[in-house]
Length: 135
Image (tube, rainbow, N blue to C red; front, top):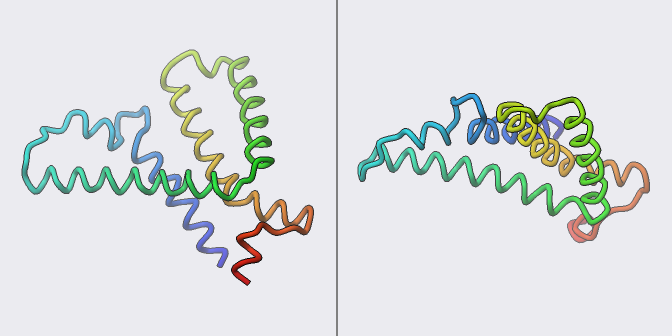
């Protein structure tokens, strides 16, 4: 079962980076410069974009749902502290590093959403309502 968790984290990272990144080698940059027309190739291009967006939204929704209020609060506090540190180190001086920082925060939220319920159970031995209903 642990292999699926590693596979899902890899899929989340690849989909997020493939959808948009500041290097110019992303779906977003390719779609902006693409000669859109009504043909099969444009349909496939649009389908690929929809699939990437759906994967990213699925992982965001899954992380949002699995972290309760306290998990979201902890993440926001940690992200705020990390943003403050990044700002004081000069990470936001150009668009390139700012974009990678935002991608990193989104990926950290995906990762936090996957492991917060396990961490909560390990620390407090409590389960959420969804875990109890499935047993």
